[in-house]
Image (cartoon, rainbow, N blue to C red; front, side, top):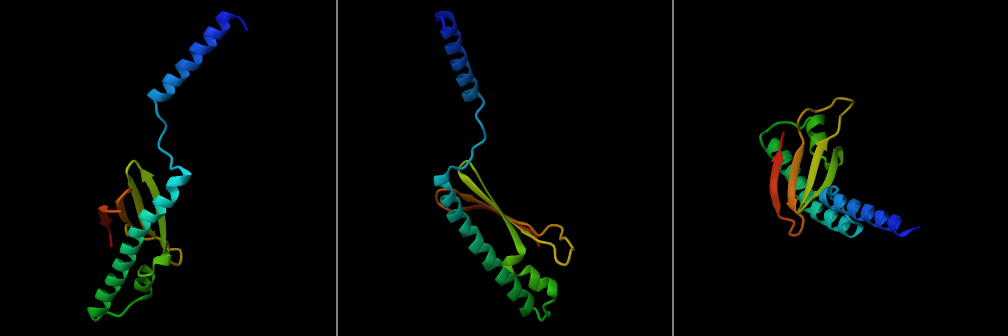
Length: 127
């Protein structure tokens, strides 16, 4: 390899590095941050389970009988849980799974939590 080829190769390597830093890739959680994401998301999980129990107690306290659908909606095992980290936040979504092939519209509950402190920054729930 002659000197001009080495200079050209060096220029190409530098240029590709500059382009890569100018167009950063989306953040991907590192292996070390995955336990942190699960720990923070457990705060949303506990809060959501408490809300389901409260909702069920209010329903029954109103003198209404509990239907199969209400029992289904009150059980955390019937929810799909989605987690993702974005910057300094962790997003957790609880979506009700179909019952007997019937899908529910709405019904998702979303949390945005501070990744470091676990504080609930935003909570949107639909019933």
